[in-house]
Length: 460
Image (cartoon, rainbow, N blue to C red; front, side, top):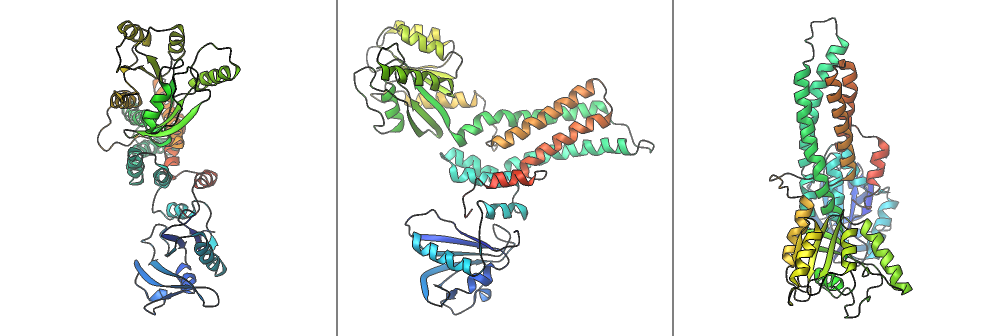
């Protein structure tokens, strides 16, 4: 299959100014050239590489199907490192489908999901971590998330992993020399030096592993629940953050009966924000079900925005919710700060918050929202400032592989303490080296590759 010529529609379905069909493989120029008539009269193989050429696309009988621009690119200076043709037709379902149908009749095979990117990986243009970053670029929800994905595509993570793996490989070579040639004049392994180098690798992996807490949020979004008793301004806060009337707001307590979800971009932080029904004791069956769902949603939250009415005394319902979120990442919001504030409520809320951030806001007057955005960023980074150019880990597979490598290095530390022979230490050293290689694809199995690229869209 790697030597097939593949093709697919590379633009989303629907109407548009243009639609693009991508063809890649050893016969891409030959097959596309069978149906393309350039305005210059030249055959495709006569056209200079990496040029855009105007002409017409023909069907099997030589009838004009569409006016188009065709880009011809000779490998290896292409995305897949293969000969590539991109056909720019008029956008629309029918023109693209008809052109694609003709190409398939000429010998092109319909590409599988992610097969273009898979070929780029298999042909050595990018490593596996870079290939996966392409999905993150496509799915980015904020500018910062996009920047992280682009940095990974540029190889920021791969460079760090290559440095760690090189050092591990040097140690492994010394271990293997002692194991395979014990009778030769091979210097013994310096356990103290190995201990220092393992400490260095563990420190590097620790930084990457900890960065996952931040990185996953910028890619997947932070599951944020707005909680509190009825009529404290939860739905008003959702509307302010979403910048639209997403939830019904009235003075009647219990208006919100169900969970409302919205994805928003708050100062570069993607929030999967959830407005819940007011939490209180109630005999209303429908409202009671909403309260139960609110409590269940709280348990799964990454961050809780606990809303309190700053103008009235704390109630038992307020205290109950504060107790419920005591173990969660929480920001306490004293709403309605545009009105006279009950200072006793402020003091008691800060005391019950137990050191969690407490902010005064007004959802009605849109006051304090910038401070809320900064507080959320503080929760994500836990106060840590990354060095310039440092890219956090954003992929769950990478995080799992890093954690496995970290565990194997800790096993080596334990073995060094009891002076285990190098043949035992080399087992964990090899496993750590291979775990890191899984991230960049150097030691990954075909089943994992298939699973990764199956997540891509057809045409990428």
